[in-house]
Length: 150
Image (cartoon, rainbow, N blue to C red; front, side, top):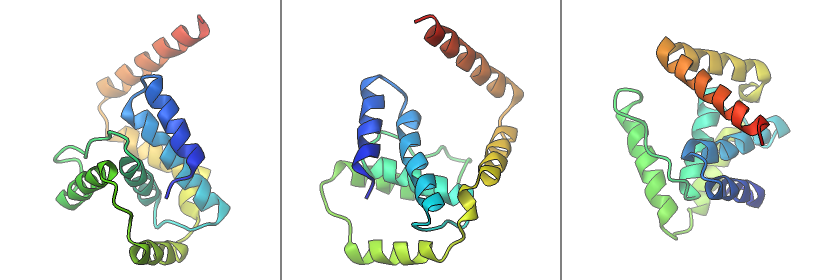
């Protein structure tokens, strides 16, 4: 269950008209904080991010499942299931939640280290085309310019 603060921050992002991925970023950040605080671990940074995105979908963030070809069919099915669960009012199973927590407690805590996050970001960027990275950089620069002009 995500913390109240996180859900509030995500709602604030939605009110401000920010993208679903930005709203979901709040849940990913919370997950990294949990790992750093020692609440539980994660096998990899990718898993930690996936847990955060799953929590976001279940909390009602309208984040679509990844496109075909980028991830496995199982991941896409799980993402679609998480999104459906976000719009239903059924309570999650306490037994499954407990089992998940116990499994995560056995995982290493290094997945949320600055080094691991940096490595993950670098790998993710290297999978994108130069044009895509360039477009993102230009968009970010335009946003910075708009923000500093306020």
